[in-house]
Amino acid sequence: MRSEERDASGSAEEPPRERPEERLERAVRAAEQALIEYEIALETFRVEVENFSRLHHQKLGPMYARLDELDAQIAEATAARTGDPEDRRKADEARARVMPMPGVEELFHGWMDGDGLYPEAAAMLTEQSVRPPQRVRPGEEARKLYRELARKAHPDLAQEEGERQRREEFITRVNAAYARGDEAMLRELSEEWAAGPVPVEQRLTRSEELYARLEWLAQRKELLTVLAKELEESAIGGMLRLAPDDPDTLLDEIAEQLLVQVGEREAELARLRA
Picture 1 (tube, rainbow, N blue to C red):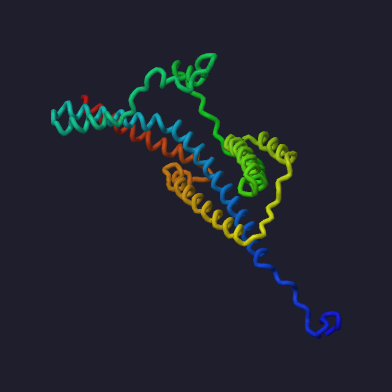
Picture 2: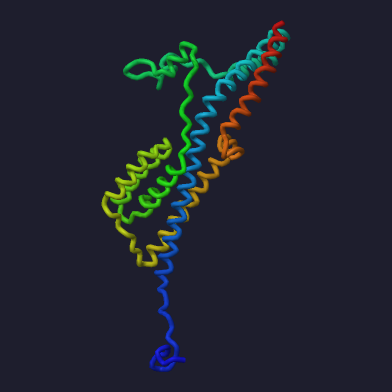
């Protein structure tokens, strides 16, 4: 063995040992990044569920309302034919399940501005076809910009309260732009963040601070896991998981099934009234 590979005592030199705080700091930063990635995935799924829910309500809501109304009419026709108090009770319950007609103020809440009725409301009152809301499904570039901004500006990376508040306000704007699928706004926000004050790097050195940070991260992950489970187990989340790549086709299939049910109930009501 060459002499330069040994120290004065003749033994081989050992690499400097890593301090426990350094290993713990690495673990904290890894946990932070993992949490951020988890939040990004959760927010992406939340946006998809919200958008699908809006489309589901607009496209299928009238069909569900029609089925409820037909069920009430069938129950009422049955009670009128039999005169049975039990049938009358069932008819009253079926009628109670039908959504009541809203009052005028409630009917036009959110449908009017300073210039009068929105075009969608005017179309409804004149029995014209209503333009469906635009489906928001963020594109790949919007997702990329969102992930980059979430990683850079996430509030969990702040060490001071003032910096945390600044990040929270900024991320709120990022989330809103992403929910709209607004790629141009995400680019503007990316430029705004790059031109803003340089964030202070976290320099955690004390073991107590690091352990406290790990504990907080674990609690935050537990909370997000609960939220993710609620989304996945919701009716809309479950439907979306059936066809994540083509949810519109799933809506069409459900609509066809509901149309069949509407036809069956209309035929039954006609028989009862004959």
